[in-house]
Length: 334
Image (cartoon, rainbow, N blue to C red):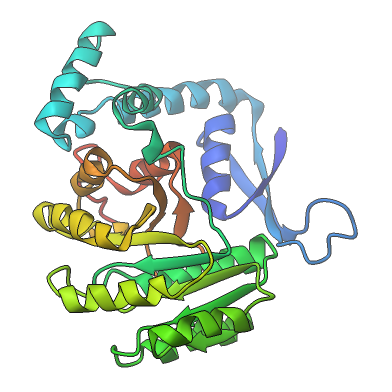
């Protein structure tokens, strides 16, 4: 009998690791929440300790079957189906060069291909959070929820003192929604009703390490509101980072227009939302191909702060492999 313990973030991670290392015959013996590290790390977030056992005779056979299954999963043409004509042409060349038929690339080969063809700055050269960070974007893309996720991540995980400001006094409930998040996290919250109030509110949060600013959502066609947001941002004396929040469920033509029109607000990076609301990943690859700005985070649900990840190539692929079938369509949960 072989017994192993895994310290993981959730049971799903434990099951994947156990299946890979010990095979499908492994059984869970016990699970408990533990704090890792030194004894004085009392406030460190608890992790899940899972104990797994398997008969030794099963390991070699099961490992072999699992690896063969994984290769079959990776051997697909989903990347080809979701790519533009220009990317397809380069993918064909890559497969020919490496002797790959029918675009049967492993996960690592897919990552290698995208590192070659995509602008490196999209993934690797992020605009890290500064003291003042502003989220802009159309109505309904999830700016307020995304701010809550960033605030929770910085406050709970990175131990930063966070402050929240909203200028969205148009949308019913917008102020109350962000105020509720602020109360839950026990962080200061301010409302800037006019551009002249913005700098004053920032000064009131002078002791905060990070300030997150929620802006009013507006159509890219509404030039007056875009100009109003610009006046708010122009009133801030300090350096700011501006992030464009873009829903992956938006149609491609509209995405292109949003990326262009919101340049008026001089955004520095992009946050992708609503990955959980689409049935395929073609729009995600479209953004990666067409944006000239770094991709900062991607969001895939309403849970704060869990349903947001830093947009590394590994994180993006891991999410897509877990949540979409080989043809790019969403998996059916049974």
